[in-house]
Image (tube, rainbow, N blue to C red; front, side, top):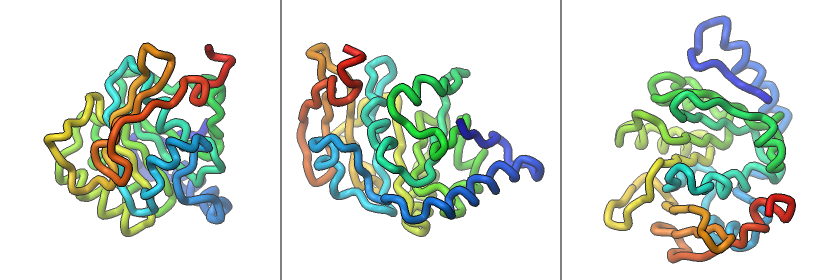
Length: 212
């Protein structure tokens, strides 16, 4: 499992250097989003490098298993920035869901734009997932969106609450809520994007029969 430090002091930049070297080896990898699940791929078919996707995923509803599907199909070098009240990353759990941890780096940061700004200033990571940051202002959103366009990245911003249809986000190409229902399915509600509306994905397509 790859990781990079929370503070970019001079010695720790060696870790970022390793990510840069690996990124050069993976330049030919698929850049568009692809999960292998037809309905999910259709939902996100409009997303392209340079776009930002905003997810509403309240804790405890297994909704993160949906964006996780997009990290299985020959992904480019990617970074997951998380902030979960002191919880760590359990590598075995990610591997059990089919994620290639040689291509996915993790970092814990409550204020990513302030604390790990260097990762947004270059194109090393072609996908960046900003998971429930403690501080993420409108200005931060604008900065991250601008950098994504400049470097051809796809950025996910995960919120710890359902997104409202009444409040927009001009920086997001797609806004979507995801959660697991009681009917052994995952519900996706697209509130901004080409395929607006709600649809279900059977749980078996997400976790496989071994988890049922």
